[in-house]
Length: 409
Image 1: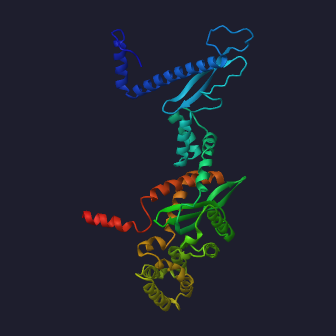
Image 2: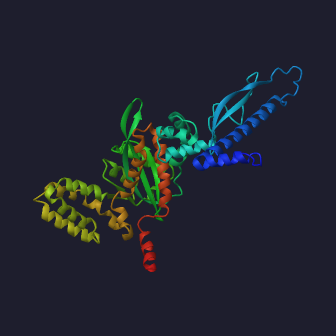
Image 3: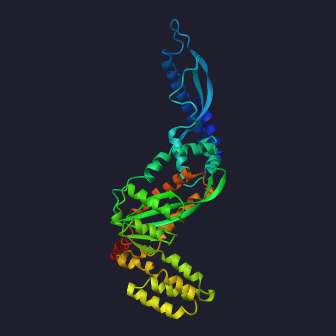
């Protein structure tokens, strides 16, 4: 900032007194000093670059016939990560042929800062929010359109991951569901569903298999999703179970596309349907009886509770009983699989938690800009969730963890 000698000592004492009264001023002075040094360094490099372009240094005599020469400079701002906004003098030539490779034309901030902007957006801030805080954080306002332009560069990587090959994934279970988002389509706002498929490998790791815009009530749309996964290398004959909530036509299409697989209908959705047909005064009673059925120690015991339920309530609430009758077989499929996985196979809670996180992340946006913007956001969330899943395999990881705690106690 400055050199200290006997002559400058009084000045230093005065500055120290001022800083002690306002400590924040010290950092402000350091930032200003750092900014000025960076400006001088970059301007110096730009002058050298122009000299290299012209083939001679400043003040060096031109060769005969050489009509191009230095022609002053123009000012432009350039924002650098960890430094702030620099006020640069960019040299120019008379013919307008010089274009700096150090500070490229139309660039307003360095690449490292672009990555930070993208991460801020993907981590929860809207383009409008980033624009509002950029002045205080970065030293210059960055428009929402600039943030959107930076984010578009992520799309190639996102699409590569979303459509990645599935040959190396030995999938045995599949969770299926759809979630709606308010999305801008042309000049209108529509509720657009996004279909999600999560797979479970034979070593019980959860992975995303598909994130695809489409009508979740359409059997043909789901068929295309399944065909796409198979084209990417999904081993269809190794799929043992599909867990879903009874969406129209989905179960039939799933069984046609995966002949060796069984269906597990989400017990939570079935309970809701049954309870919606029960009298308000009896809902708690009915819910307790349903819990007995679905959390029985075996399939035989569950069927015993089911038949008792039918006997007790068929005459009193036939609609509720019929709703359960129509779903009971599909609700108890999980009993055919390892007992330590039952808690994870009873419902679509795995994918419901994903949908909840999707909603939480997109809430600041209110309205998504379109399909590409939606994929950028959701795939980023999905990638982060996959990383957390690595330490929490499906179902059977709970027992070893409990054993470790028991040993410590």
